Length: 224
Length: 224
DNA sequence: ACCTGAACACCGTTCAAGT
DNA sequence: ACCTGAACACCGTTCAAGT
Image (tube, rainbow over all chains, first blue to last red; front, top):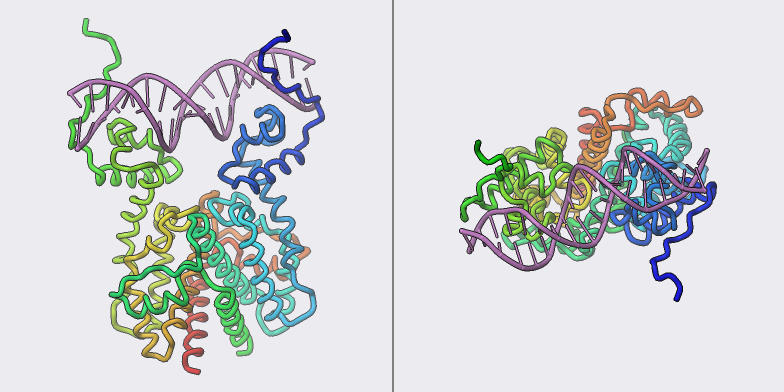
């Protein structure tokens, strides 16, 4: 009879592992099982490499997460950037609506960028800077100072981020954002309103309407 | 000579531990060392009880986190609720400015409520529902439908939440939100604007100004 | 009824090797 | 230069006790 010992997988040749392969594997694992399930041992197993080999390419897990964040964010730009032509109001409305859509349909990207501490900070979205610059150009042409314009764009992005994060938190808990929050009858107005416009998320229409309200408010400001 | 064996702490009497004591200890530990440092073994050690004793009072760590979230959120209400009298515009402006202040000065509360998955969802802030009801009353009196009014309040809270979370992420990374983001000169408008109004946070004035813009936009809507 | 340590299956990371 | 397992100090949780 042959030897019965558990045969361990063959040692990988040197040069057969790359940072890119690890990033791709990590993205695949996190997409399939969730970011929480991404552990170094599991990743090593999924890639068929020794756990510790990962540490030759990345100093630690945080560095790896940074890398997959950049990789995941890179694709965002093409998904959401509106055509160059058009009034800033419409371009900006479209940009943030698409941003919300993209993050809503990509939990992993949302988790990497907005949930818990994204170590990259604002650098995670460097790919969007040309888009910001273009909007600033259009807005200054419309009468804004650059500071006013940027302040407005930041506000819109904060609103969008808030909406995305709220909904993500609900989904993470297995709560359907469409189901209204139960509110005791002590609060008649709130409980009536919460049946339509609940506090667990925003409908597409409500999001867009409020976004437009903010944009129009800014536009009125610049006209002054 | 006396026995040299490491003496283990005396066994606690039955009844000497309470859920409240555990919650207080957990809050103290999380405040002192950060939410990440709150582990079951550390908490047991801090309280001088066996780690596993905690499991008699809480099913698991998540349940304990829920409990301390509720405990931490309870104090929020008194801190931020504005006086009853006044126009809804001013009350709401004050409410969200104070909400931001409270969360900015209490990292733990911010982490519990907004960073990563808060299992309690909107129930974490039940203590604010009377305040919401009051604002809905005032806003419907001013011409809003209850749904419109709630939609507006949700939007304001999303903006606030976005601002708080962004700043918290920066602080968590040890980045000073006041230091401007370095932007390459390829983006002249952005780099000029980013020196004043950077993308790492919002100044108090900018936050309030944008909040007021949103409120006035809502008010104009109801006048129609 | 309440409190406990031993034990288990995980984790991230270091280190001293192997090739 | 690149890949590796053994080992370490942690974690959350279960379980079978003790009192």
